[in-house]
Length: 352
Image (tube, rainbow, N blue to C red):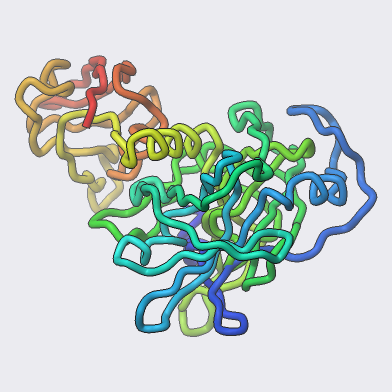
């Protein structure tokens, strides 16, 4: 409903400045309170202190294809030997051979290579050769509270080392965005923030007042113009992949070069309520994998899944979000309708 009112959600991976494509935020005020702990009552971060501590670990990422096209985004260094976390949509052309160049906060540039990516979660890892690099500290996105102050860092419109401030506006959003794969990417359990995020911010860090990573800035909601097309600037509604989702995916990529997702072992399609609004949205089970998790839990083709772990589901993206926030072996409670009767079962997720 919210996204329909606003018009569109767009990725914030590319804007144009001096031939480079980027996305990020605006300058911040100085001299506020510092030392925010999760859930405390302070209303703003000390942005000057956060910038001093965190900007050395923030990079601008440039991607150039052989035909001269390209774009830019942001990333954060997560290991001292050069692994960098960013969004898949920032570096997607590199999967087809485009070159990646990283601009450090000190102005130096270095080539990077693509390590691996998750188009489904819009997360990727690249690597530069190095040692002793400044590493962003890890926070705890699960401890975030609505209203808690945060700081966004990145390279909006190619303007490297840009810092903006805001608060956590909402938690637990499921935000479908475009992907270069055959399905939408889903920002699962996303953090909504009013910190100014613009094209070029994609892949950049959302941090708490102690400068610890709590999210990866990925998309913004926009208000459509007179033509109905989405605008490109910040309207105070941005979305970040939470650190608790992004880092396990990044770790898989670093260790194996790929991502293994938990699976339900079924295929589904959305069920739309009747023309008069009767009926409940849900997911129609088209098929189950013989011997797979759904089959073992007793689900059958023709069942309609209405809730997963107590939350209503009406889109395939809802199921994808559950997969991205779970791991193989997790037990998921599923409510479904069969022949007009509601029943419940527990699915133990497999490895896909």
